[in-house]
Every structure is written in C-alpha cells, then in structure tokens.
Image 1: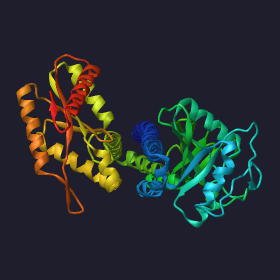
Image 2: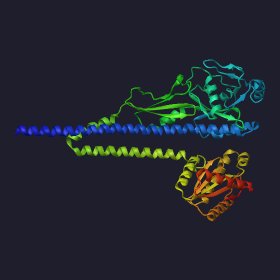
Image 3: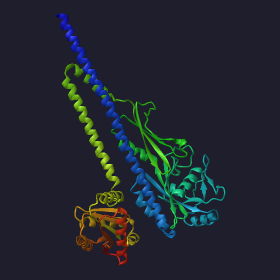
Image 4: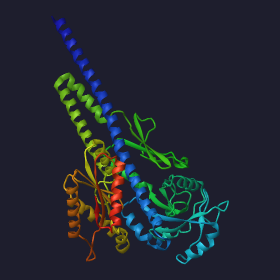
Length: 503
C-alpha cells in the first residue's frame, strides 16, 4: 500500500513536472517569437521615422535650390530671408550654402565682385589630409563651385566664404547630380563650422542639391544643406528610449565610408548578440544599414516569469494559465500600440505639411481607385491665379498663409463626400461623387460666392482670391485621360481671363 502510494505520488509528480516542462517550453518559444516580432516592429517604426526625417530634410534643401533656379541672379540677396524661413522648420539643418559655379577665366572677376560684399573674401580649399590652401588647385582647368553665400551669417560661417572642394568625393557627387539631376548625400565628414583641424570628429552630413539653368541644360551651382548628424541620432534615441535593452548601430555603405563606416553605435553594442536584424535606408547615392539587436534572446524579466511559471505549474495549473493569458494581453497591447504608431506614420506620408490637406501621393492613389471601381465621379482641378505676386509682394510666409486660407475655403465649399487635395505649389484638386453637370456647376458657383465672402486679409488689406478651375465628370476614362481633360479645361479658364471655371 505504502509502495503503491509512493509510486502514485511519483507518477503524479513526474506527470506534473512533464506538463510544467512542456508548458515552459511553449512559453519560452512564444517569448522568443514575441521578442523577435517586437524587435522587427520597433525596427520598422524607427527606420520609417528616420527615413521620413531624412527625406524631409532633402525636400527642404530642395526648396532652397528651387529658389536659386527660379530667381534671377540679381535677386539672390533674398537668399538669407528665404533660407531663414526654411531653417526654422528643421532643427537638423544647421546651415545652407550656395556654391556658385565659377570658370577659371572668371575667377579673378568673381573674387573682385565678392570682395565688394565681403572684404576678406578669398578663394581657398582644404585638400584631403591637408591644411587650408589659398588659390586654385584643380587640374585640367576645371570650373570650381565656390561658397559665395551662407545662412546663417555667423562669424564662423562668414569665415567659410570662398571655400571650394578639391576632393574626389565632391567630383563623384558632381558627376552623379549631372547624370541624374537628383540631390546626393555625403559620407560623414568634419564640418567646416567646427574648424579645419583634421583631428576633429566627423559630426556632419552634406546634402548636395544641383541648381540648373531654366533650360536644365547646364549647372549653375549647388545648394548644400549642412546637417549635424548627431541630431538624427538623438531623435533615434528619443524614439526608442522605452526599449531599454535595445542596441542600435548605423553603418554607411557609400563612397568614402571606410573612414567612418559606423556612423552611430550604442555603447553596449555586441557583434555576437543573440537577436539581431537590420534594415536599409536607401538614399540617392548611398545606403545606410540600420541594425537592431537584443543582447539576449529573452530578457531578465522573461527569466523571472519562467521561474514563477515553474513554481505555479507544480502548485496549480490555473496559475500557469492566468500567467500565459497575462502575457498574451501584454503582447496584444504592444501590438496595438505599434499598429497605431505605424498608422500615424502612414498618415504623415499622405498629408501636406503646409495646409494639412491630403497630398499628391494620396490623390494619385484615390484617383486610381475611383477609376478602377468604374463608378462615375467628378474631378475638379484648381490653380491659384497670380500666386507669385502674393509671394513677391508680401513674402513667402504670407504666401503660405494664403494657401492655407484657400484650402480651408475649398473644404468649406463642398460637402463631406468631397475630398480636397493640395498637389503642390498653388495647385489643388477635388474628388467628389457628383455625376450631374448642373449640380457640379451649382457647386462651383457656390465656391465662387464663398471666395468673394472670404477674402484673404494681410496688413489690413484684403487680397481677392482668384482661381482658374477646370472640371470634368469621369465616365470610363483612365486616370491619365481624366487628368488631361481637367488640365485642358483649366487652361481654357485661364484663356477666358482667369477667375472662372470650365466644365
């Protein structure tokens, strides 16, 4: 009897132990899967945020380049005011530089002209592994791209005027911009703003944006956006501060990156970490590899949970069930938060940063979807008349406020089924479900009435809003055909004297 009881006790104990071990194995594998998925999701969100920040900087620097492309040279003095307005929006951009193309035979005249503005102006370069050197150093009498204006005009920045690059890095970037017409990003480098000492740490990045002539047949110069790289990585740390065990490393794989391939790395980075994944940020002329890792495949907290589960499994199976349920709930909460953040990032990619309206990307997707569904709809194209005069007379900040005001009027003029988009510049579009020409005409008449009732005010003056509008009801056309048709109607309204619509 006693032996049977001992045997039965042993069987029960061994059975409970086996069940506990099986449950522990299942939970352990679930933790690995969860930690892996969490790391993947954190990586996607973090890289997406960093990629958006970088491309936003590219866009802002491109707007300064557009200033030089669209502005006559006599008006380049307005560069400082324009650059100041842009710089306020992006903390990571610490300076804008205008590198004017100067032929060798123009160098002497260029220097004399610049000395009329800056008495100490002189041409110089800093060769690789060399010191500051005055004069022209390039071979084959190539033109140089000289720093002739800079924002902000601090004493340090002003001392940089006259600099041109004589390094292979710049020649490669110059060749790339000529071939593609796109902006290019440098490898990490020492900022001239920090000094000329070769021992200084490489804290900066340069975005080179080409500036062509109006015919886009020749390069007039290059706008350089100066970025302090540490601000990117501080943003990265702020984004992932809740992930205490997370380690990050960012490597540059572009030209000349061997000098500083690792751009950023957390102090506790290990090459033999248990869990490691990487994502790539593709840039116009180089790639950044962003690596994420956990030092251990499960966290110390996970180990404590496993210990509690083992004790609970020997005492009561319900405790184990409750613990697994709690872990599942925690997993779902994290998943919902990650989905929410991913959704917020997606909204940023389809929103116009100035007006808050949907942007061109959202418009292209919505238009294609409506065409694919083969349901009739109407498309309204809007171009703001004389918008350049508003910018010229009152400045670009007022021009931005003018566009914001127009966006609000357009939203107020149509019902909730209509969607207003800003395609860029002074161009707007509206998609709605109207399929009757008479109703569409009535809506456009109401819009014109609303424009008269809500003029834009600046400096106690009212600016009348004039829009050239083209509209069409889609009945089977492709997205390209309906866009072309609306563009034709918009052109007709301009030909008819502007401030009107053509359906």
